[in-house]
Each structure stands twice: as C-alpha cells, then as structure tokens.
Length: 411
Image 1 (cartoon, rainbow, N blue to C red):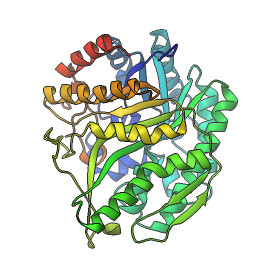
Image 2 (image 1 turned 120 degrees about the horizontal axis):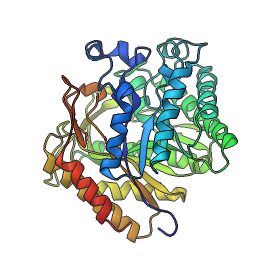
Image 3 (image 1 turned 60 degrees about the vertical axis):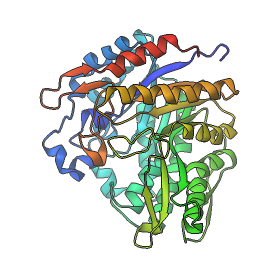
C-alpha cells in the first residue's frame, strides 16, 4: 500500500436513515407515512457518529439528501447545508475521512415531476445543486457523484419500480446519458473547488451467470448483462464511448465526454445473479438466485458469493485508478452469518492486494439498520441493530468482529 493508508469504513445513505418530507420516495412508499424520520438520524447524528469511534473506522461514507438542501425549486435551506457541514467537521475532528455521496437514488419531489432525468434540463438543475453543496461544504476530498446509476436506471426507467416509475427503453437511454453527463459536470465543479479532489461513481457490480449453462439463451443474456451492467460504464470512463447492449434490442453507441473523469473507482458488491430467459418478463430476462457455493442466501434471498468480488475488481482495474469497495454487506439477523460474510469478502480483498490490485479501502454496508427501499424495514444490514419502535441502537457481535478485523488485518 506504500504511503497510502487503507481506509476501513462503513457506508450509509441519508434518506435511508433520515427520511425527508420533500423527497420523491416519501410519497412513493406508503410505509414512510408511518415512519417519516425512519431512524431519527437527522436529529441523532451526533450520537450515531460516536459509533464510528467505537468501531475504530478511519473513514465514513454518507450521502447528502438533495431534497433537504433544496426542498423547493428556487430555495436553498441554509440549516440543511449547515447540518451536513457539521457532520463533516465532526468526522475531521475525530480523524475520520469523509466520503460524500451527492446523489443516492432520491430527488426533491419537484425535480422528479418537472425535470426527470430523461428531460434535457435535468443536468442543468442537478449541476446547480452540486455547485451549491460543493461551494458550501468544506473539508471533503472524496466525492461520489452518483450511487449506482444503473440501479436507478433499471428501477426507475425499465422496471418502473422506483421514481419516476417509467418503463420505456427510449426514455431509459436518454436518462442514462443525462446522468452520466451530469457526472462529468460535477467532476469539473468539484475539481474547480479543490485541485486534489478524488471523485468517482459508486458502481454496483455483480457476478452474473446463466441459470443453465447449457441453454444458449441463458448464456447470451448473462454475456449481455456482463457487458452492459458491469463493463459499459468502465469502458465509457476509459474511452468516452458508451455501448448500450440490451437483450433483443439494437445496440446503441453514445458519446459522452467523461473519459478520464474518475480519480478512483467505487465498487458496490453484494451477490451473484443468475439470468434465465423468460419471454414473459421485461426484456425477456428473469433474475434468480441459487446457493451453488453452499454459503447460503441472505434474508433478501441473495446468494453469498465472495469469489465474485475478485472478478469485478479485475474488471474495474482496467481504469488504472485506485479501487475502493464502497459498499459490501449482508441482510441477516444472524450475527455469525454477518461475521462470516465480512471475513470471506475481506479474504478476497487481501488476496487481490497481494496480486497487485490497487485497493485502498473497504466500507461495510451499513452502520445501523435502515430503510431498505423496496424491502422496507425487514432487511437488517446494520452492524448496530435498531429497534424501530424505540429507535434504540444495540451493537451486534458483527460490530465487535469488524473492530477486531480493523486492528488485525495487515493492509
């Protein structure tokens, strides 16, 4: 690792801890009517930040909730800006490196109604938000512009299960183009404020395999998925050219001027997915999980597949920039299963470092239990368990084990 210290961290998302009365997701999911503040983190953030010191981490990835910063189109809330600056200041005082995510799925409700990502003005409006936040908040070197833009695309524009709830390939491609253009603009805005800034995207990557390796349609779908879902954004950041290859669709080529606009690569990795041809599904693709490694499934039904992390690290390494595992975690109420998950994935990371891959950090998802989008409150990812009736936080055995790993691992 040379002079670069390895960053041990945890990751969170503002909306998943805080909620927001101004966000699109608040009116999207009825469950949020009963738990508008979710974990009450917006008020209790100082107490929650103390948990970072209890763990012994030296980095913390969190997001800024755009809808709190700009609850109305032409209004910026100074108290919200000061709130997130206070988080950064506390982290710096305690020697913890902040990783700030500008966009983690949610939007102000007015934005998604008036300027959804397939509209031409979306990049302009988002860029104004970035300019406001980056010019106000001081002390941050590491920025993530978008969390999992392809998940946003698939959920919001193909499946229609996330805001804006559209299911249209044409709109999806335009939205993807505008999101990636916005990354490039945000990259320039951040570097104009701080020359030594490190800017990236947190890219969700998965091990993708055919449901039946002897079925040519299953194999075709898994190959297409690998090229598009895992690799196309990496190719774009290398060349400025995006290849969009969707099942049974004409291949599209889009030039987007963001080649080289990435200072590190953020990888979010959770699972392996098997793809099965199903003519009755969207794009004729059915996503399924199976326990081929015998390590079990998570409470969300996802396969535990540590070996797949090595594969996506190798894919991302072609960018020749440092790699940070910006999310990796498991939904389970079984502390031993959580411990085994962390250990197995960190074994993979350690082996990759020994092989020469430039991996600079690991962020476990998540610090505390939170709201998990389509799964509500049932998916327990946290190192600290939350009682959603009393909002009490309790450390799990996995929290103590993560502290041990931080002290004992030699990288």
